[in-house]
Length: 82
Image 1 (tube, rainbow, N blue to C red):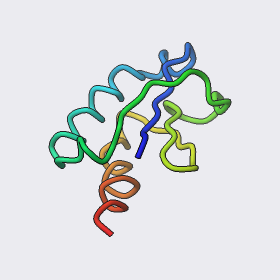
Image 2 (image 1 turned 120 degrees about the horizontal axis):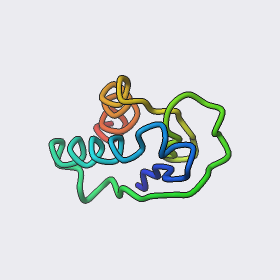
Image 3 (image 1 turned 90 degrees about the vertical axis):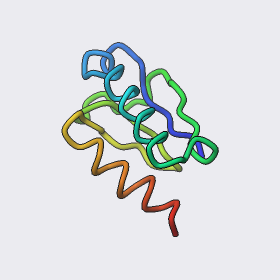
Image 4 (image 1 turned 45 degrees about the vertical axis):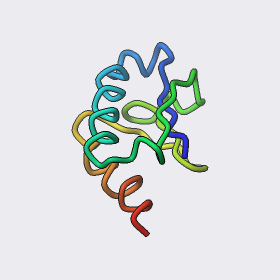
């Protein structure tokens, strides 16, 4: 499944590069390289939300450096284990 991370100017200021780097680490450490495809995206229209805009499935989330690990465990790894 695609994991889209906004790289637009507003999200870039919210540490999108750091978020992308951490997602790469989490995907690799969980062995999900063949199931989760990390992609960059331009504006998703949720710039007022807190954090970097991330789309997974049909939902858009605001992900921050402080909540990325919890987000990954609950929304991505947890959903794929089902």
